[in-house]
Image (cartoon, rainbow, N blue to C red; front, side, top):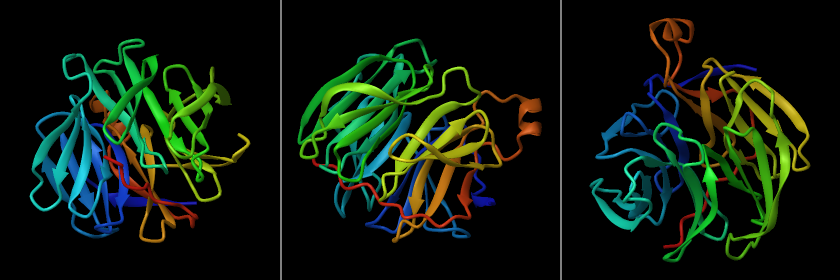
Length: 289
């Protein structure tokens, strides 16, 4: 199994990749670098857009607009001009926090993670947003990641990377709200590497990027580890399905915290990779504003 470079732009903290079906383009963020990147396919020219603040995720709304998740909340982005308009404040009065992993539920609900800018312990939360309503679901999270959903929307997954547990919680398919208490799905406490971003394919398989050891793990819906794929950068952050058929996988990475010696030992850090594997993926739906 091999991985090639999809984009050789080195991100300080590459995150939030998502394939936008309206444009046929992969979008991703450099959170710390305050950049929005997009590229239609391997070998195509990338576009880089500077942002006024840290942003971690982007989701489709319709053919004219997207929703950008930033350190101050949700902002509508005009596809044609790139102009940002504030939509909903989230922790905008707390300059010590920023957004992190976020994803759209099949119902159009949006789960949004926040965290301390210096990963302060339990400074973050996971929120639910749908049709103008915002609720805090899980407070006291250090590094929210792995927000994703079963294909039918009846289960949600998330993690606190600092804790090493991937949680599963029953979910209302019609609203994206959790039902009952979360249960342990994967327990990586005491193991090398942190649970980072995750996507689910049409069969409910979870594809998880493992921070610190350069790996993509695939878990069956019952939690069994199906396979592991090594990647050429240690700090892998989040996967996404690529192409109109969602039949390929890209993975973002980071060079955060690496000094000159660390970069010399990990020269591909921060780049985005294409994995040579056929998958049956699926794309996130549009957010219901």
